[in-house]
Length: 207
Image (cartoon, rainbow, N blue to C red; front, side):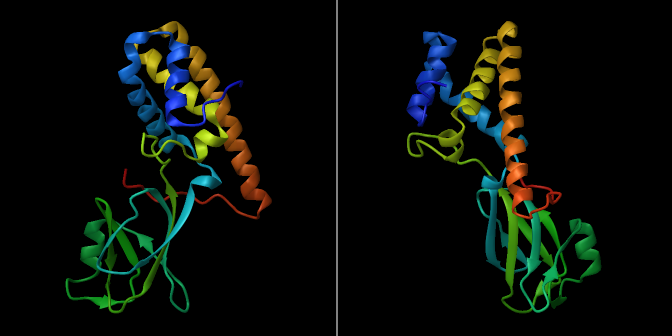
């Protein structure tokens, strides 16, 4: 695509040109934000995979950019994988005073509860899917806009046409977006398998 937008300001200008509606300038950042929420839900690429090393505590604050956990374990010898359970199961299995090497975790908002409560400062390892860095004046670009500006444009246009109730154009942008995302997903899968990686079912996310 000629003149691909490479930063937040250029993307807004590109969306404005495509919708050809001068009254929506203030809304375009909202359309882009809606596109990013869609990306976080449906994209699953190697660029979104991250790791974190935390300290095991009874309640562990999660990384701010975490969308969903792939795996969690205590880096002990041997390694201790953590099983996901409900808060009720965790509390029923381990009393309030129980301590030791954690075996399970449960979600509580933006934190993980560990059971039993750690009896030492064990390293807690996470592999997780991270959110797309949200574009703004302070964060003018990210890896997705740099590498795939068409995906950003189609998704923002889809949100714009939905706002305009322009049913005729909705199908056009959705088809373009679905095709581009499908191609990106296929490319990501090829990278994973080429590197010997295998897809792992995600643990429930916090967003």
